[in-house]
Image (tube, rainbow, N blue to C red; front, side, top):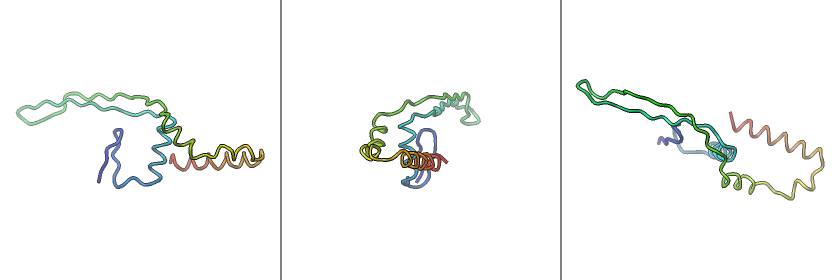
Length: 101
């Protein structure tokens, strides 16, 4: 099964890592390319006569932000010490780096 999403072909079924990455991308905003091609039919068959690539910024999506924030426990940060907050920050940054690979 091949799914075309935002100009990218994704083979196979989406797994949890791909879905988390897509949700994070939607929550933060991202750049994508829109490709437009024009073809001409002639004696020798069909040939491409024009190809235009537009780079477009897709702004952050509030529903994706809400979904991500819903997974965070708001009260837990209030009871954490500064050291615990720093460790949690580093853990989350490492997790984001790993997901964006």
